[in-house]
Amino acid sequence: MTTGAGTITRMDADALRDCCLAFAGAVEEFPFNAETSVFKVAGKMFALSALDREPLAVSVKCDPGLAIALRASYDAIRPGYHLNKRHWNTITLDGSLDDQMVCDLIEDSYDLVVSALPKRTRRALRWQPEM
Image (cartoon, rainbow, N blue to C red; front, side):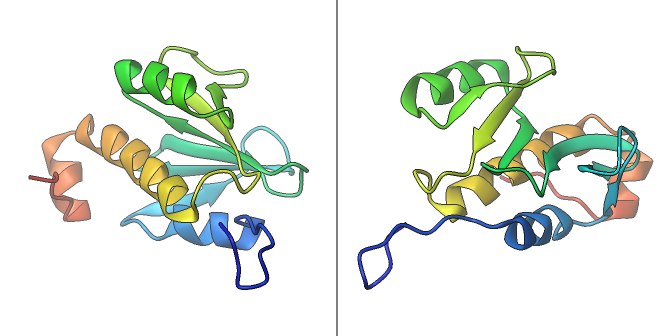
């Protein structure tokens, strides 16, 4: 994104964490190590990131067909790092993608995970699929 001065800005770790935790039932855990934030809903992972790493990146779950299309369209989106490459993308937050697009991809990941949860759990989250 471009500021008034013409410089490129990019989502920082605090904004990424805020985006991931904005969803109903979302929590941040550290099951792998103290450096890797894993964002979950109902015990299921929907995003992960080493928030202190440069460049900052986030991995998100994605519909397999869309995952391929996104990788072909954006250099900053590649197959999930150390994840199932069919279902996960890793997004480098280098400023080439609009922050809103990054948040939308995180929301899509959250929605994919929640849609596979039992109906009772979805109701408890008051989650409604987009129409």
